[in-house]
Length: 305
Figure 1: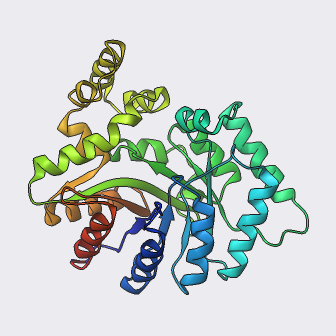
Figure 2: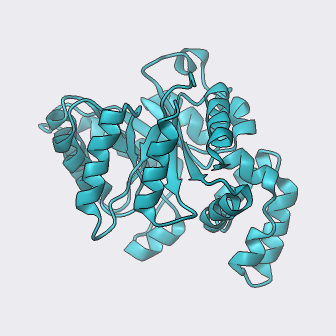
């Protein structure tokens, strides 16, 4: 097929860190468009390791939460990774979500102003070296506008493909068309011949996000008001994850994730490029095994490109 290679998401869980570094090197040799690291675990440490282990592939955080370390500390770390990787690192930042704030015991302010202040502090830091491009986590229009104003790119997580043209429409055309302005989306992906089983894997992945008000408001804007109203009723009735998952239609799931046999997943990937996402980032899940199996399935999928 003539579809561009996507990027891949990798995270290093305890006991698998050596293997994930090997997968990063394999991702480079296979020609993936990039490697992007979610906030699970210490993704700045993982980025440092990938910077040493690889030679050509672009990689970045997607995203590094701004509240768990100081802006100066993170800026120094980002500049270090940028330098040792010869400029291949993208520093993706965001505010993360309430559950992670609670786990870390941090208090937060207003996301828009906190992100702006973080970027300003990082860029004004002295004697740290050159900063990498800064990518902002985006979902709704206010943060997209901020990314266009102060960032070097933007990245969605679990964005709706049918809503993407409207979301990207708030960016100036100069930004949308600038090849150096990063536009990505972290897309949950499960490759499996039984489409219904693959759908259930992704549904379980996304259920926790439906408990977050900001995501529900986004999906309402994207045209899923009925599903989100049902979700809110299920949450108010006790919040059983299975009951919440039953509120999520297959249409909604297909709009936010990729699942099913390889042919269907690749057709969906092509549609993501057509929607305006320059760098689709496949986030692996498996119906047949763990994270390592899921990554191997993404490798097999992309062998078809």
